[in-house]
Image 1 (tube, rainbow, N blue to C red):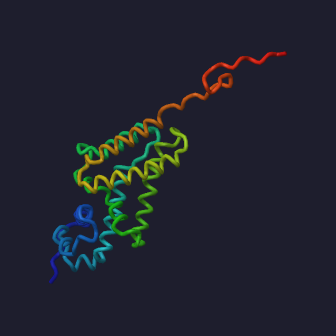
Image 2 (image 1 turned 30 degrees about the vertical axis):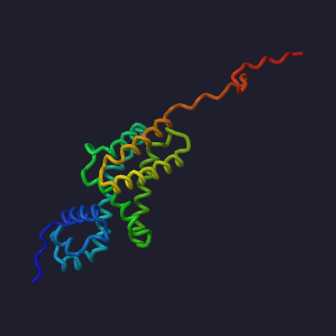
Image 3 (image 1 turned 135 degrees about the horizontal axis):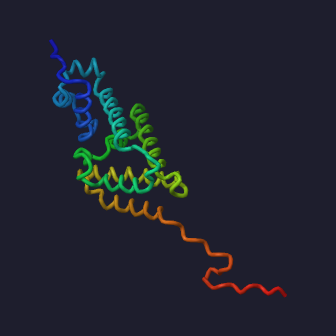
Length: 211
C-alpha cells in the first residue's frame, strides 16, 4: 500500500521550487523529488501528474511570488525606486540566500531553449511582468520609456545570469552599479539648447542691421 502524503500542497511546491531553482529541471530525478518533498512516486504521478506538471506548478508559484514581492510597481516612486531595486539585487544582506541561483524563470528559459510550449507561456508572462514593472517607474520620468524599459529588462536578465553563473549574489555588484549609473544619468535634466542668438561656438551673433 502506498504511503500517505506527508506534506501539504504548499509545502510540496515550496520544497520542489527550492530543488528546481538550485539544480534545474533536467538534473532533478524522481527519487530526489520524493525525498525532498515527501511525495510518493504514486502521488507524484496521480496528484501532480508527473515531474513536468509539478515543475509548471512550481513556475506558476514562483511567478506569483515575485509579482507580489519583488515586482510591485509604484510609479510615484519613479527612478529612485529602480535604483534601489537594482542595488538590492546584488546585495546578499537584502536578498534571500536562494537568490544566488539566479532567477528560476530565466534558468528555465535557458535550459529549455524555447522547446517547451508550456514553459514558453510562462516565459511570456514573466517578460510582461518585468516590462510592466520597469515601465511603471519610467513613465513620466524619462524620455522614450519603452526603449529604456527594454534596456533595463535586458540588463535584468544579464544580472541574473551573472549571479547564477557564479553562485554568489554579490558577483552582480559591478553590473548593478553600472545599471544604477545609467539610471542616474537618465534622471539628470537635459542640457538646455543653445539660444537662437548663439552660434555653436558659444559666441554671440551680432544683431543684424536694420539697413
